[in-house]
Length: 331
Image 1 (spheres, helix red, strand yellow):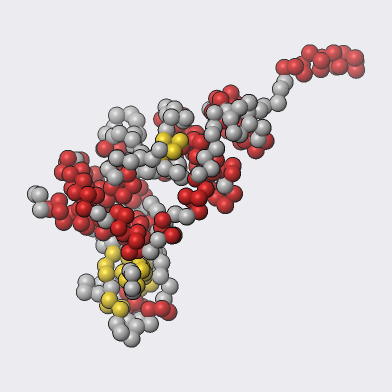
Image 2: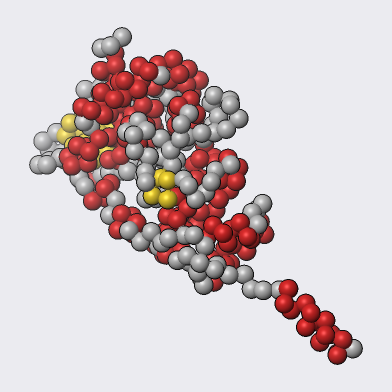
C-alpha cells in the first residue's frame, strides 16, 4: 500500500506547482502571492488573470514623497488658495456651466446640490477634465498597498476595490491612468467611491466618470447627498474676532461640534444672521499676517468628505461662489 501511495504521489506531484509571480518588480513576493490567492478564492478573478496583471507591475516609488507631503498639510491658506482660485479656472467653470446648463439644473433639482458646487469640484479635481492624472492606477495601488506601510491598510482595500471595479465595468485595469493616490476620471473618485457613489445618470448601462458629463455631475452630487448634504443649506460664513476675544480657547476643525452661541461668547461675530443653536465648526485659515475665521456648517463638513481638509473645502466653496457670480452675469 505504501508503495502504491508513493507511485501515486510521483505522478500527482508534477501537476501541483507553487504559485509565483514570474516577472515584474513584484516577482518573488510571498505577500503578493497570498493576495492573489485570496482574490482568486473570493472573487471572479482567476489566479492566472491576477498573475498576469502583477507580472507587469512597475513599482512607483516616486509616489511616496507625494503622499508624505500633500499640499493640504504643507501649505497655509494664503498659499493654497492661489493654486485653485484663478481667473482661468473661474472662466472655464462658467463656460462648463453654460455648456451643460440644463444637465446641471436637472442634477441640482434632483439632489439639492447647487450647480456651482458640482462645477467647482470638477474644476478643482481635474480642471474640467483637462488633467485627470498620468499615473498607472493599478501599479500605483500595488506599490502603495505593499510598500507604503503607513497607509498600507487603506491602499490594500483600494486595490481590492479597483480590481472589482475593473471587472464590473469592463475596464482594462492596466490601461487606466489617474492621480498619484489612484483617483480616476473628471471627479477623481478613488475605486471605493466609484463603486459606492458613482451613478449611471444618463442610463446608458455604464457608469462612466471619464467621459460622460451626466454621470460625472450626477455622481458628484450623489456623493454629497450620501454624505449628508442639506438642500438649501449654508456652507460657510466669514467671522470677525473682537479685540478682546478668547478664540484660542476653542478647537478649530471641520465638524460642527459647537453651537453658534459658543463662538459668540468667545468673541466672534458675523454680519449674517445665525441662530444661536445652529451647529457650527470653527474654521481657522492662516493668512500671511493673521488668522481668518469662518463658521462652517453641515455642508462645509460634507465637502471635506471629498478631501479631509478645511483648505480644500474652502477652496471649493470660494471657487463655486466666484463661478456663480460670473455665470449670473451671462444670463
